[in-house]
Image (cartoon, rainbow, N blue to C red; front, side, top):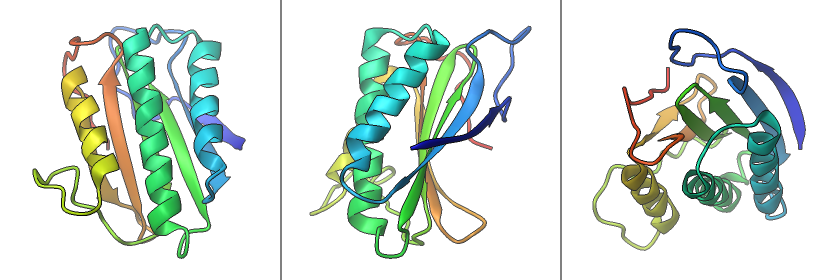
Length: 165
């Protein structure tokens, strides 16, 4: 997985930047091996940047990353041989997103009934809701999709819920 760069990105700002703020983007092939690689990359990034997230939040984020990358590998690999994982860290929250080039937009994040598939996305929705965060699925300009979830750094500390521009 390579780091495609980082920058300030579209993050909500408080009175000033904190040292751990930024946006990092990694690309990976849409294969099973990318799931643990993405988890490790996100975990290492949060540790390296000194992001003050509780253990509960970090574990939730890692589970979300696993589910989103697994979802992209299982359902999008045919039309999207690569996927992108983005981590955006603000002063009080962290957002992870997985982007692929497959046009299918899953509804499990917003539907209350999970039929045969989508259990991973229902889990993402539940983790996000319990943490006081937000999640959604959006189309990209290239016709693919990005699925994102944002959690407050401290459980129950969602002040001004984050949004994805």
